[in-house]
Length: 157
Image (cartoon, rainbow, N blue to C red; front, top):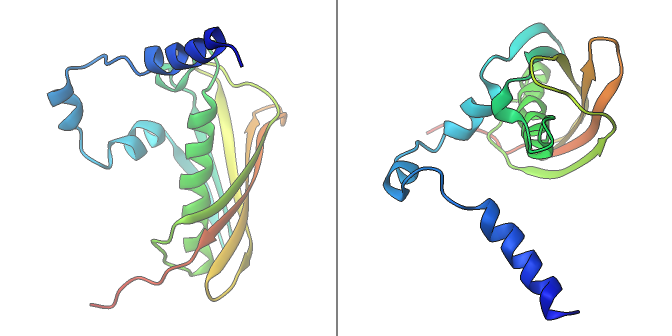
């Protein structure tokens, strides 16, 4: 591998991490900020046993430099809605995701309304599996994910 290629990789990551806010301002952001940043504007349309259907108008804050929804925002929606759907199966959990497998199939753009549907496939004593799909209103799939979560029980203390 050439030194030029290594330097290009370093520059790409470090340039992307340039601060837009002073460090004290960044450090003052509350830990739940990221969830609210991604979920703001999300509406739950249907909550049924083992199923959630949500809607979101893609805000400009979730776009990448290509002007379509960032893959990280998609992954965050999979994680957050995927976690929430376990509550519809009677599993109140604060467990951690074990695996997310996401197929990115199409792009979503600013001000486009999308649906996010999550379905519980299985809940066991310790592990749950769900699918999460992001779709355009015309039915075209933006992303399809399988989401596996550790189902840690909430403390009774």
